[in-house]
Length: 536
Image (tube, rainbow, N blue to C red):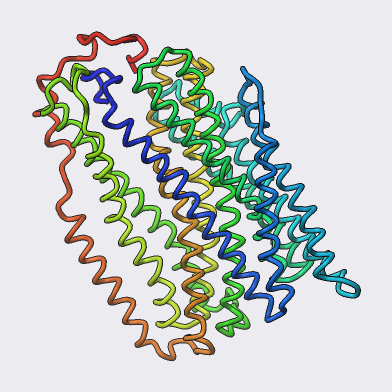
């Protein structure tokens, strides 16, 4: 939609691409992310079992029990017609809570069979770690819901900030996102300390397995968001009556919260998984101490803390490039397809999907190269102690940045929904609504691109480090520094190639605007089914 030019119901070009993007990002992408966490937590637990056959098998049994519990939890989800946001959210909570209770019951049975007699004390300590992980996952979800649902003060405060314009919406949203880091961090810290006291490093890994054991129902809850969003897009494209759109808007607002809750769950599980993989790496690389006062270790921490910001920056810039290319394509179609402006011709939405797909593949080359080669640079060039520090720094800063971006984005999105659904601050079409739309536009790459990508970054670097651990086992600092020149050279070559092929010749978004829209009718001059509702 080009403000003041085309009526906003003529945006089928973008809506169909948006529907595809919701499925790709919030279903397939988040599913891959959580699957990676699940597999990583099981690998870490099996590795930290130190050859104990019972402890190696335990995470696989807990994961299997979680699948059965998730299937049963599906049938606990139900609600009634006309339910409000809190009632709808509680309907989804019933599925998660019932699955968690069943996992605890199954885990108790499994532990009692795996650790009989004199081993029962150790077994029940491990069971306690599994329970702590499950509870931690639920609490992180509750904290995320509080900061992203418009039923609570944080999101409502962003809407109220829109009274004074878009700038204050952005400022308030960033503040809420930063504040939202506090509860998840305290929960994760308590989980790590408690599980470590009960059963050491293996207990922390089993807490991650426990947190992810109900992945089936948790991921289904997260996938609910894009399904509701797509339903709204279909209703808009089909120009269905207003009551249908009101229903889908209410479900979509809930979907934004469930998606944010799923992202918070993914971040928490990624941190526990990465920490377990880091511990496994230390064992395999024979890093017995990593003193933060050691300049080598501290340098690794600082380098690792920088990487999530670099990764997030690259993904944010990629979104801007891809969005600009799609905008140019939309304007080209309006200028070249007869009848599209009047709504009598069909748009080529496949072209927008193709642009987005091609851009996503091209733009992920550089972040992927950096994520894979950064651990090799630190480990081969300097040594395993520096790599240990780098992983610690990346996990710490990656968690903070991911939580802030995911929750700020979800809160921005729902601050707009609060106006559209509840009629807050005057409802649609007001200056407050327009300000919150700006916040929502900023929040989308926050919550759907850069934030979730950081989970993958910290897990991927931890997994690469664990894989490379036997190579650098026992190395002293700078002992074989010349091997580190190889990944540095590969990074340099990849950067030059990507810049030359994909970044050098970017399209000028502003260039075609005048040519495309100068003769277009203004929105007020075109008859629409509900022109007054399209003013914003």
